[in-house]
Length: 399
Ligand SMILES: Cc1ncc(COP(=O)(O)O)c(C=O)c1O
Image (cartoon, rainbow, N blue to C red; front, side, top):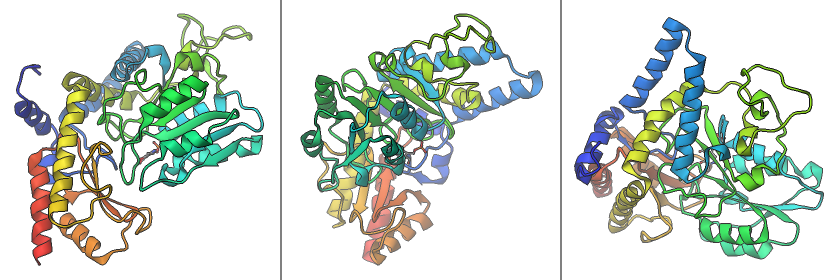
């Protein structure tokens, strides 16, 4: 794609490769992505190669290293700082269990706004004397001030979602990261709701660990994740699970046994275990190429524009937007309703439920989360999607 192609043409060409956009007004990347034609072609090519030729292992390993390099450059890390995982939970658990804990140490988090997958890994360590220090949210935000107040000499980890899954606000993670760096505290980020949709720079944000999966903003498949661990930390960590790929045997065969006295791989590579999810990696590569080509700043700006337009449109129609007028807290996500007025995937307000049903009947895809209708944008969305949702909502409200 020509870098000089104008913005509208560029994104129109992107959208044309996502066939689901012809069937749906798809605003649910916070739930899961839709697949592009180029991703489907990469999946088919990988499967064809396995089906007709058995597959070439050297090429498969080359794919793993290429994608590791591309992901590293996407988040401004070094390749040695990236490990392959199967999802976010695994990445978070890898970090949680590889740190040198002592009884009485604590981790600080805001469990009410974290996904359970970033709460249970810490509760699981309480049996080793770790204290899970919980802070309450403030107006739907992870309160960075409250976290900072709770830090003490025994704090080893602070963990947050970069953007919460509901209500979808951006955490002030750079401020927290800087403070953790000054105090030698491991700053661990769950990037589920920001990777691919928000510019990610682990160095500029003072992030020590970042766990992501590939089925949302990275526009890939389920069953694969990537874990960044800053080299200085990774090389002080002992993996809880260890297998061949975590051991440094130079260029030896993938199944070669080394000596019993082993050396760990450099950086986060020590967390790799055995054979990789080659299919999901093949699927990820063209999406990463596309995201790198468009550029994450441009993506973030465009998605914020779409989200602001939708939020303002809802406000003009008199609907309650979580967080009020669009501002710096917003990313690619818009949530409508009252946070907490419903279970994890429901809304206890009959009017909002009727609106949700009306949108579903008209082929709009979005999620219900904790009393909220959650709409989330990605590169295949455009202002027609925003207009369509607002037109449908206006028609519903007139009934
Ligand atoms: C903030 C957050 N963390 C984690 C996950 C999922 O974790 P995993 O990849 O382990 O299934 C999600 C999925 O919706 C999420 O929104």
